[in-house]
Length: 205
Image (cartoon, rainbow, N blue to C red; front, side, top):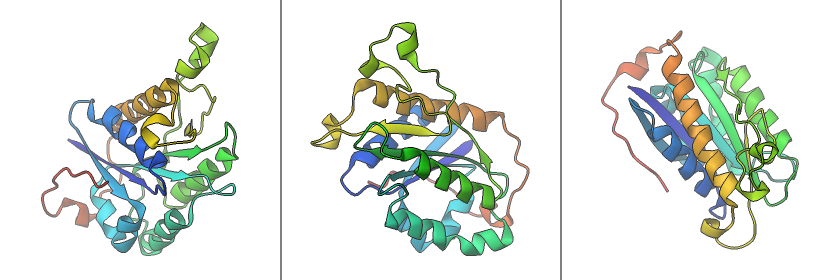
């Protein structure tokens, strides 16, 4: 059994909505359990993420980077970094902005750099943009053409109505492909603390 944590910050529910669809995609893979964790909760107890085999990190893009609450979570892992306790875990990233570009790439690079400093393995976004095969743009997976991670564009209004079908489908495929990649990996580093206690699936909204 592989355990995945989707760690995210969402101020207005849009990033959370995408996180939920990523988690749903991952959970469709056999022998996979997924937990949604808010960034501020993970920041209060960063050691709790050691039990997971894979981490999918998500933040809205604010002024070209991650949000302050998500950065606080990143900073809280300094003690884990000193001991390289996250070394060898699979990681991926996603971000949401209200504009098609919105400098989302800067946010993904920040997440990538954070994971590289921890010695984690980075899984990009291998989904081919479907609009090139004739799928209508708003329905196409990876319509924004991001390879380093998942990008989604949120319109105005409630999170449930803010995304075009292509971005929702992209999130589900992204989660599924991450879980498949994780299943193929053999752990190269297993801190002793990750083997202690039973793990129960939970979703924190």
